[in-house]
Image (cartoon, rainbow, N blue to C red; front, top):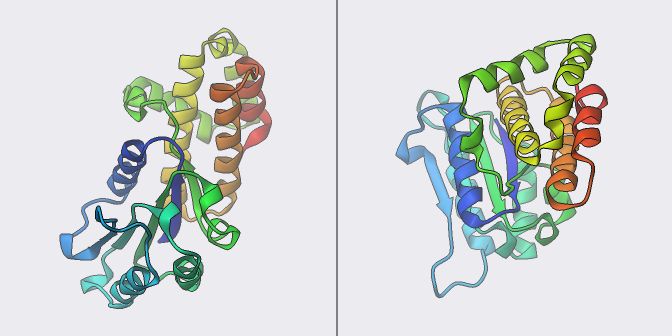
Length: 223
């Protein structure tokens, strides 16, 4: 499968995004899940815990079913623990999904970040994109060519001034692109996600023009 880092937002939001990620994959047996957390007495994620996770992944599952390793407090990994994880992140077994949750990318080594698909966990509730009509509209944006997107932008330009609508659109695009990334393995989609995360940060957390930002991304920023 792949290596993923979910960062930003609260731990609850990061865990929610992780569960959503698993939902894209399907049912996973309990014995194929390995979670690394911290007890009240522990302050760091040690290299020993990472080695245990790697041993777990190296045991092939029945029928090569998906095996998942979740590192809940990635920002607490020691440098030694992060370095021990590098080779597995770069070349995970074909059946493996490794997910790191972290408060911020700045707590992780650059070599960790470069080996992962990055998913930003913002403050907008992902449930806001559950409307089927809206999801269908986003799918058409993904499948349509540049002409279709320009026409769509022209018709919906007024809505982009509404931050709630813009946030809903960006979350829906992220969910759809991530789903395609998991199913198709197209690494070009990683750049699309990076561009989308930058836009979300500018639109939702800074004084950036919502209308211009969304319009530019839809026409120039991906595909």
